Image (cartoon, rainbow, N blue to C red; front, side, top):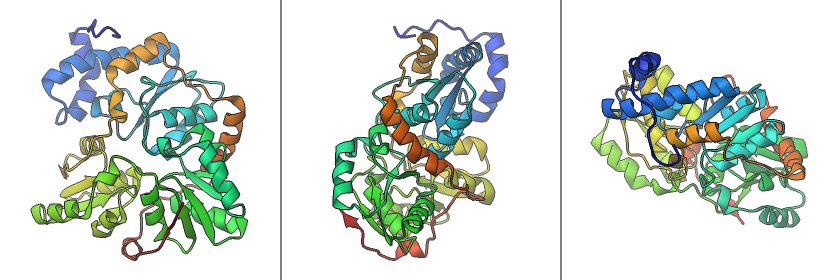
Length: 361
């Protein structure tokens, strides 16, 4: 596969083995595409069994990966929990590099592979461990919370991790533990601003941004309202606060999916990465999805072809320095050990519309 060739045929056996998957994704994958994808899906699933491997697929993977080969699927928090629980020998991270590092931190004795080492993240690239050490010196009496979208080196310098699903919970918990009314929340400026509106805890933050979500603005939402007046608009908290203010719902990717699956809106807009809508739509055929999405170029580096090569050749292995991993593990494990909410956390939309100042570093 590394040379671009296609050694597999769409045989009757492959067609039969992948028929249940085809029935799930057929509205989002063309028959021509499926004839190329199905043999790879069958081969990947066979390799997983042979090598005692699992694939952790993020919500932003394309449908043929998410539904076709993902053993555990979900948001960053869900995948981190699954990595910690997995008894597989090999973990393949169908996501970006910080997710693979998190899996390695939690599972130091397992082989963690990522299909493309270039699958990065603008948030993870926005801050370094040296930056965090300087912040610690500037704010020695404040706990430091880092979004899971950070490198292992950054996680090693902070007190606890969070995701968009539990950021408010983590901020309030760590503030109570430290007996303070202010917390440093890194590195996503927009997540910090949205969290600040949900809690009485004051927030200090960094000026990092997700290159997918920062491109949405208030005009996008107004135009959607005008074009689709009956659509329910769901936004990710990495979006600017002005986008959240004009939306009907805000929450993590898991919360957005839960909203669609439980409320079953007739028409919905997901203000997040493109593949999220495709993957949820496969599970919610009764809902019409309007797709004003932005692609994540890093997530889209992961393909069936390089997942197959990754498993076949055991590449590319993700390694984390033992000392860094031990310190990062404390921060990640503290997050995982928090009691999970009874249902995916959602942002209070009344609070979301009230401006709260955030101190930017």
